[in-house]
Length: 552
Ligand code: HEC
Image 1 (cartoon, helix red, strand yellow):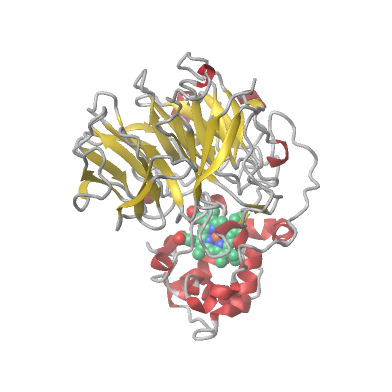
Image 2 (spheres, helix red, strand yellow):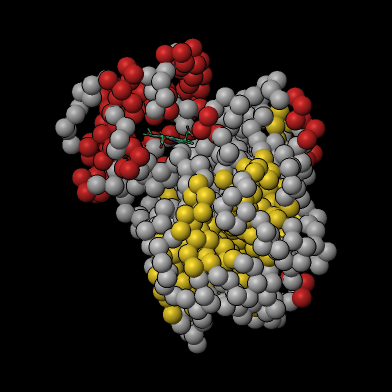
C-alpha cells in the first residue's frame, strides 16, 4: 500500500523538495533547519488522544521507523528524548516536506488532519497512551507474497541465500543509479516461528547460547575469554562467561551501566594483561580500569575523547594498533548523502579517526567511509579492516556495502563519489579532484546488506581452511524491494592474509517472507573454545556455532 503511494507521489515529492530548497534562506538552525514559522504553527489537534494517529503511523511509517518507533538499520528511531523537545509544528513541517535525498518521503499529499494525528502519535511514542496501538510482535498475519522475478546474478535476495553459496560482486556488475525505484521495506520483527532455526553449512551446528537480552549489539572477547556484549539501547555492557554442559553461559554479569548508547569495546593495552576497557559511546570514548576476570566496573568511566554525536549513524567502534600506540574509532555520517562541504553536522563524520590512547592527537585516518560500523585489526599483519554500510536511495542494487582493509589517508568515496569512480547523481560536478582517489574495497558486498561487526576467526575448532578468515554480521536491508542480508557471511582468505573479493553465505534462515523476519545478526566474535558467537537484536539472543565434523 505504502509502496503504491510512493509511486504516485514521485513528481509531487520532487516538487516539494525543489520548493523547500528555494526557501532555504528563510531557514534557521534547529530541527532539520525548520523555519521559525514552522515552529510557531499551532497544532489544531493539541490535547486530543494521540492513539488516533496509530493506524496511519503503522501503515505509512512503521515499515521504516519500526512499529514502536525504534528505528531500523540506517533509519532513525523516533525517540522521546530527541523529539520531545521538537515542537508539533516543526514535526508537521518535516513530515510534510520529507527529506528525499536522505530517504525520508514527503507526506504532503495526506490530508492535514491526518498529518497532525500522526504528529501527535509520534510525539507520544514510548508512552503508555499509545502502547496498545502497536501490533503485538507475535502477530502472525501472512506476509507480503514475493512475486518478483528471481534476481539477476550476482545480485540476490533472501529467497536464494543458502549456507555455502559463494558470491562475488565486481565493479562491472553495478547498474546505473535509479535503475530500480528505491524501496521503503523495513522488516517487521516477529517472534521466532516454532520450526525456524539458523541454518549453517554441513558439519556445523547452531545452539542458542543466551536469550532474553535487551538489544545485544557488538560482542568482543576479552583476553581471559569473557565475552563482553554492548546492549546499546539499555546503555549497558554485559559479560557472558564460559559454556556449561547445556551450552549456556556459566555466569552472566552486568559489567557497566549508565553509558550512552555504547557500541565499541576494546581492551588496552593489547596483549594478555589489559589495564583498561575502552568503550565507544555515541558521543565519546570512555575507559574503565580493568584486570582480567573483572565482572563489575571498578569505577565510573573516565572520559578520553569527545566524538561527534547528534543525529544519524550512532555506532562507534574502537580498536588499537598492535603496538598499542594508536586508537582507531569509526564515526558514521550524520545523513545519507549530505555534502560535508556545506553541512556542518557532517564534520568529522563518515571517517575513521585516529587518536593516541589518552585521547590526544586526533586526526582523520581514512575518510569518505559512510558508516564503518565494525572495525577489526588483523593480529598477524596489524592491518585495520572495516565493515561499511553504504548509501541508500539509488535503487535495489546500488551502492554495495563493503569490507576492506583501510589505508592510512585513504578516500572511499562518500558522498560525492562511490566505488569505481562513479559520481553520486545527487552531487553532480562536485569534487572532481577526488574521482581517481576512490579506493575500490577488497570485498564488495551485496547492496543494502547492512554489514555490521566483523571479526577474524582466530579459533582452532573450525577446520584449518577457516583460520584467519573473516566473519561478518549482515543486519539486513530496508532500502530494497526484496529483502537481502539477515545472515552471517564468511570471507575466505585462504591463509593469504588477503581477500579475493569472494564471500559466502554462512548462517541464514532469519527471514520468513518479504514482510517478516525473526532475527537480525549484529555482532560476531570467536569464543575461547573456538566456537563462533553471534548476537541477534531481532530475537535478542546470542547464537553459538560449533564445528561437529562430518561436513566436506
Ligand atoms: C522509506 C522509509 C521511511 C518512511 C516510510 C518514513 N520515514 Fe521518516 N525518515 C526516514 C529516513 C531515512 C529518515 C532520516 C532522514 C535524514 O537523515 O534527514 C527519516 C527521518 C524522520 C524524522 C526525523 C527524525 C530525527 O530524529 O531527525 C521523523 C520525525 C520522521 N522521519 C517521521 C516519519 C513519519 C511520521 C513517517 C510516516 C508518515 C515516516 N517518517 C515515514 C525514512 C522513512
